[in-house]
Image (cartoon, rainbow, N blue to C red; front, top):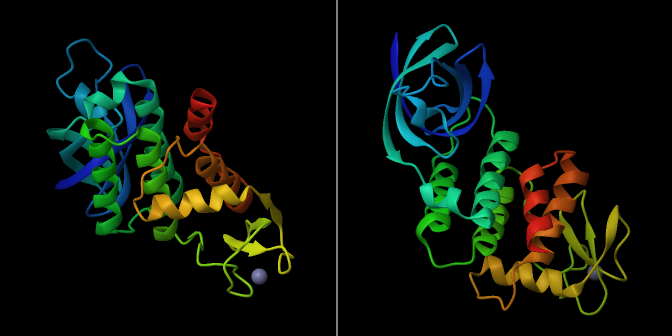
Length: 237
Ligand SMILES: [Zn+2]
């Protein structure tokens, strides 16, 4: 059976001498895996379709749940992401997030579009790449059931003044009087920075504090390590 799906390549693992197994996030089916043949040979026609960030309309031949890519027409390669190391690790963090937190057969059109928009902004936009990534991650956390709750202290509801705490179990922030969970005290400027990013307000510096907090949250709450985010933080710090 032939099947046509629109998707973005998240990653590819070598298989045999010249094939790869791709993980593709599709608009119609969520994450699918598919074999792509011969792409490691010189001059392979579908090589472009086996690279991360390739956004294309894929044609698969499928048998049961096994798919093989037999054709692809490129929609966007997001090439500028590969030419800048900060953009590259920001983009790779987006793909890694999707790979870890989206499930097979779960379709979420709004989330799919947010990924494409984020990669477009990284490729062609004027915003700082780390800002674009932080904005995407705040949105993506909400879409995958790990929303951060910025609306005051998660317990008493008051605006948090002074010492600020973050509970990684609830994704909430707390004032000194209320904090009684698992997590740690954070720099109050981190919360202010996260709120600004969510509202699309400009920052004076790169959002290192926010990206650090998100990394801390993901590691402790979900036990998933986004290695690209760690690498990005190492580069920009
Ligand atoms: Zn409180």
